[in-house]
Picture 1 (tube, rainbow, N blue to C red):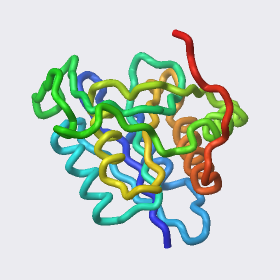
Picture 2: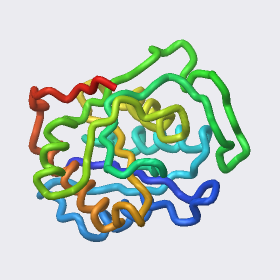
Picture 3: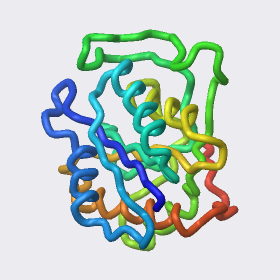
Picture 4: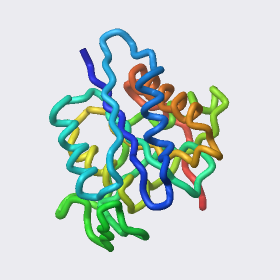
Length: 204
């Protein structure tokens, strides 16, 4: 039995209903996992300290074969497959614990960046083929989402696909569509051991 770990985030700031948590909850109810695969889904607190500790604990407990995080990016209008997590915390607003780190690392002494190990270009094609608004995003930012992506990539053994998906507000992309997108990402990861090689860079 292989375990797939998917995380979302709970409320923060003025976002009382975080669509990432709602979508992960819908995924847990509706996704038809392939034979031999079980899903562990959890909403993390929007806390630098507690969210990173929890994702490390979940990886240690479940030893997942795949890790996908999801979080809200309120200014985006597309489902964003993140390519890079930065070893940098620079919080524009405090987290739910009141912490507001500025220019400090997620993991002291670790590399400046870690790349996703999800087949994001194949997943992007699957989302677009399904008619979902999707894009590749270079960086997961410098807030708690980025911290969790970096912590997950640090925690998983080599060869375990791990990465992060940013989602727009629910009035831009409905929660049901985000849940469908997460299911397609999981299906793609489980059937695509090596990502496709197609251009995905941007000039801006």
